[in-house]
Length: 475
Image (cartoon, rainbow, N blue to C red):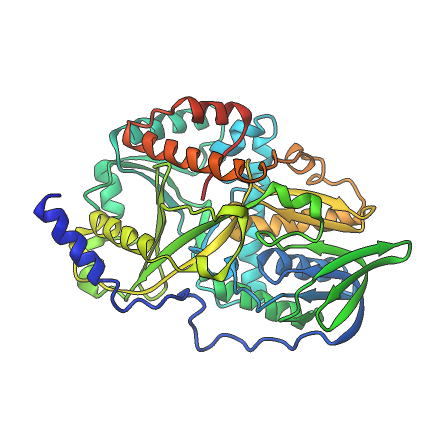
């Protein structure tokens, strides 16, 4: 290893010395107190299981559609404590984990999906304003950045494909100089700039704001109340919790990465752990050295990619790259902290922004993503249509979960809508195989993706086979 690289690695490790192993977003003295746990029996029209974005949007929209509907929401720990409080705060219009994925899977309805996604993002912005949710919402857009020569060509080809399909509105292809004028990094060779399709926000504050909006509309929320079993009969549903039961006419499951109460759904998702760092606030001089005047979110174009953005107080969040699947697909608290990944991320950070040498990280954390084989959410019903579920957002659920809430409520209503008629909504991803095949397949895919990044983007036979089968693995 060259001396310069060794010195950079040593400096990057030093930058982690004071980092707290907790999500920066959740490490907030102003976080709301949890609601009491359910004790005894409860009855309602609609039970929502899960207190992340998926469940919160479902409860909120259910009351907006019908203020008289009696809605209860239960959360196993605290509102927003899992993925909704640990993500990067990228709220994208895309419902399909990016237009490329949607175009490849649903080419006949991609224009409709893009329209619905744009309307969904507008609706989120409107709800943030309507309920006075203080979540640092900024419609600042996103740069998809090329850091290797082959990625420049890939971005150009993709832009041309979108133009030919009539999907390039609001997008701009930037060369290296124009990209570095937006955000200054010597590694940036070009970018695709989406000016309107992504907003930046404080993810935990969005969850807490949605919680308060639900309470204000009359939703009854019970925290520290895991739903442990679900059963149905001719008169409705019964959900068991540690200290009581809930009897409901209908239920919407927003449990995402956690094992579904509908057992047949469990094979469609696996947990993938993603990790992030947050810096201390940049000084005026440091911020000037980077530029970033338009405050966009950024992601690089590699298979093993990084995502990064500015917070409201001018910290830089830097995450991604490693996507860790735990053997057996077990969600465990010990997987939330991974120092070897933090060290790797810190080294990558200072490669991207060498002018910020000496900056320190204050927080380092991880969390589980509900990954499915098609990268984007899937939907369905169970128990004779009384239960609806949505899962599989694969790391792009900050915005798409609101659309999923609408889909679940549509499905429970039994009415055919524009949403329920979508092939995306009516189809399912391929399930993951049992162990040890899941670990073997995911491990081989990760290895192949890393080789592709190191070899000009060339995909080997394994990746080509996965592409042909419609299978994927992504963070």
